[in-house]
Image (cartoon, rainbow, N blue to C red; front, side, top):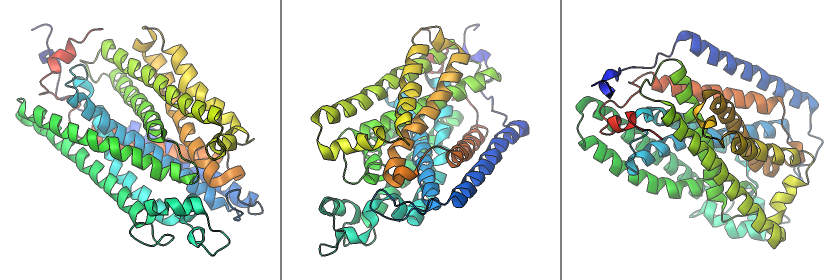
Length: 430
């Protein structure tokens, strides 16, 4: 049995050491300090003398804080649910190669209950500052601020209540999506750990069934969540590709996070049965879906550009002709397409930890900028930008997410030791 999974310690658990926790906590504290300095600067710098571009409202520093919270809420929620999606996808596709790394994406789902609380609380606190459609005067046909387009979309947010009151339909969707996502995550996690105890193929088959059900629900819910949480910020504008666009951005960021953690664990002596062939496959996923994201980005941009319909093109005009946001269009494309494409093109690059660590880190930052560009222009107009508040908030959320995920990983064995395809995964070669 020289070439068998029995040679490895399949009960190995990740030791989340005090030193590692301290390092991540240090980043969190640094982020909190930078965030506090950013908030104080915004308060002292005022900015309240500027009129808000999105309708003449006075601008206050806390609106930028709310916009930052929303960007990070949506972004890290996406990475968390993509982890569960990737896990489910491997079972639904009967994939064997990934059997040794499945616990890593599954652990991402541990962030979902926290994400649910953060999203719902933020909406109740900050909805008027984030979403133009929450202002009741837009629906008053006799008022000065009546907006026919927003009134026409009002039922999507308020039904069955009167438009401009409490957005019950919107809240029901948000609660339902998080409720089902957490339910599916817990179900898949329970089945995965039951399989460790009992073995056989029954749990694998059950997990396949639940994975297929989750994927169907995820396909619908992720698109509607993209419309609700991001596209509705620019209420007049819409894109029929937007659900795909947000999914693509989430998916690349999620794949990069999975790859980073796999490389991190291998370098510390864990995941003994995961070799450079598995790492290569993860590198191919990151490479391929970076191109997929770019294809969606360019398709959306090109269709809107050559049709040149004012209510569609305004979305890109606001971003490309703005002194605040136009540089980040290029940052977005360089970090999320050109660098991954050029660096990961060769076979060797996809098999070397150093390339993957650099590129995956840059992609995670790059897709944060993608969500920054989706949210800030519509919420803050010319009062937005990238500064200490943005850096601090990203560090706080990123380190908190990492603490939760690694904490979840440390609780159970790292390898699904009774997965029926574990042997196949060990012999995986490309």
